[in-house]
Image 1 (tube, rainbow, N blue to C red):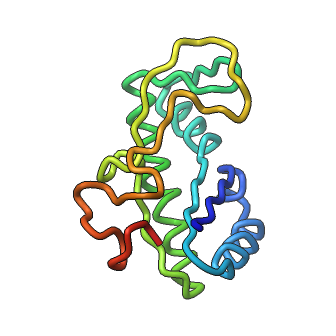
Image 2 (image 1 turned 135 degrees about the vertical axis):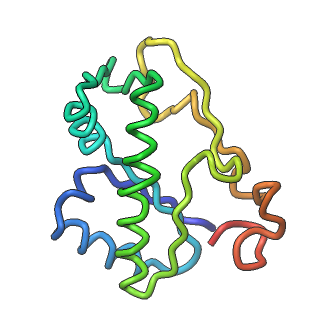
Image 3 (image 1 turned 30 degrees about the vertical axis):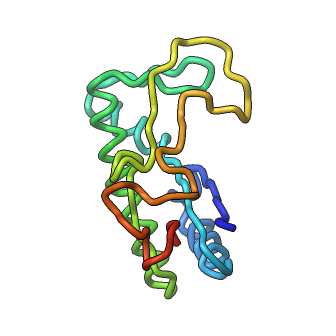
Length: 146
């Protein structure tokens, strides 16, 4: 079974929390996937660029300018910083964005009440049972990512 762990962006911004988390994550046995946030940093960068972040019921409204910022933050600094920390601890890590190899597909959502725990606008592009079409055999020769 693949373990999926989600951390918020605030962990990435606190060196002590990040180090403790990375040590715990690296110690997990078996295949694992880390999903991370980065919204606080994205918001700060938006402000520095003169882009006012807009959220409705805690969900970011993503126009073209916001999409550019969140891509830079999540797929750039946050992703690569986590990969580097995990690699330093001896945990082989591969940083992917949801758009890479069709790993995650998403559609827009109209602002409406959000049912906690049910992200209806995001679906796994390949789930945990088959690799993306551009990665035959999956990672490390298995049929699912490690």
